[in-house]
Image (cartoon, rainbow, N blue to C red; front, side, top):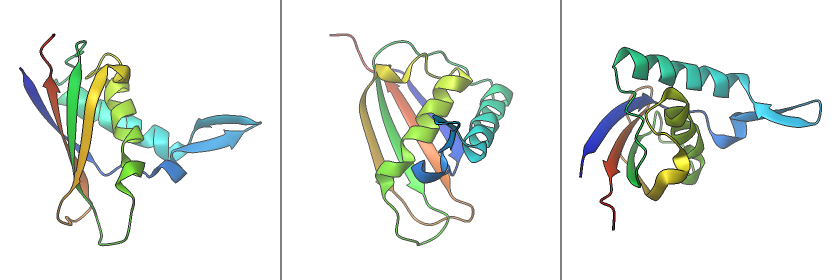
Length: 120
């Protein structure tokens, strides 16, 4: 099983990820900026793996502050951005996803560990 490690910036929460425009739900400016930053980072690091098998993802979340927050609000932005950046072919390939809250670090960050699962 191959394992890939990627460090990402702290994402916007789900409440800031989408906006409503003319009755349609679209990605907000913050959401687009985050996806652009992730795509640029992935491209510069040559991490466009296009993983197409069944995947297990573990996210180590290093929050920017001690503020109360729901970890489940952090899944969407990084996983969608990794798909858009070409790391994962499709986020529907993820069979096992976990998140662990870690210590506070200035600015916050996510450490993503992607493991290719063996076919059964």
